[in-house]
Image 1 (cartoon, rainbow, N blue to C red):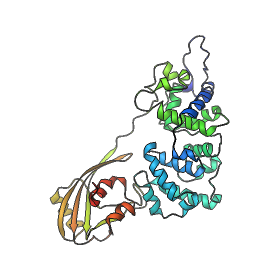
Image 2: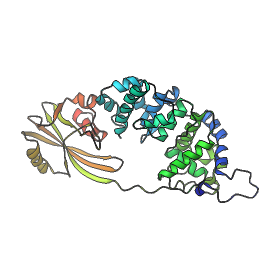
Image 3: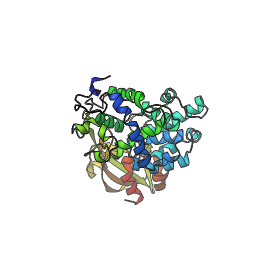
Image 4: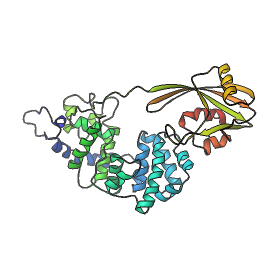
Amino acid sequence: MNDLYKEQTEDEGDDRPTDPQERLRSINEPLLAWYRENARDLPWRRDPSAYRVWISEIMLQQTRVEAAKPYFDRFVEELPDVHSLALAQEERVMKLWEGLGYYSRARNLQKAAKMIEEEYGGQIPDRFEDLCRLPGIGSYTAGAVASIAYGKKRPAVDGNVLRVLSRILADDQDVNRPEAKRKAETLLLSTMPDQECGSFNQALFEIGALICVPNGRPRCGDCPVCSLCLAHRQGREEELPVRTSPKPRRIEEKTVFLIRADGRTAIRKRPDQGLLASLYEFPAADGHLSEEEARRFFDGHFGGEIRAIKYAGKVRHIFSHIEWNMIGYLVETDRIPAGFMPAEPGELSGKYPLPGAFSRYISFLTGKS
């Protein structure tokens, strides 16, 4: 067992478990009892079928629960099963995903649905190993689907769970390192209960979301396993987990052109690889251009007669590793430039999937800002 999981000190005569496996086994009963009384009413929990669990878990990667709920409801209403997802137009899937970000998640969902149709007869597999073969599914999502939908004894370790475990065990290992997750999965697999595995995993998620919170002081007085938590006993709750600082984001400045002719706006589809792959975008130039510079850029790259130009405001959008600082200009012109397609105002919000980075400019164009 990893030395970082070993408890360094115990009060003399303390009958609480010293071995990390024993300590984690001892949390099972109080954690499950707490979850039965305190679990949030979430739409994917009301009907925990494999499809609904899968969709929710993919959405919840990099997305807060409250933000994901309306997206989940819309998605499963229009695409209620694997078959409908596999057959849907890619643009419709991306439109349903619009605003959630990390669009590769949506593309992988559809790739996985097609694979499930072809290789598993449309039935989401219940074996952990088969789930891990599907595009976009790693050990966490596979563990969540296998345990919650199928009752399999498999852990589901995400950032919330790593934080909870690091505090319970006073573990100083860097949770951003891949080996920390692998060791946590191994430890949980040997200690989680044989029954109610899905509820146990969700109880760990819930404790991490509501009690053992990431920012600020954890609510130890409300925690059902506080007496078993070494970080609490040592007064180190806010020191743990240990994590390396992320690399600073790259900042990119852009000038966005909202080119409009006869009430329609120029858009084009992005490449099918890279950032925001296969989504639609407005044309843009690098850097922040003055109005005069924007006119010259327009003349040199788009052509056509500029009938009016209007400043459309500043927008800042943060991706995981990049930050876009944008300014925009609405350019009224006599024609849509070559290489672009014309979109009606309603199509910008209802048909074509555009990144959330452009949502303020869409509102500007449709008069909803």
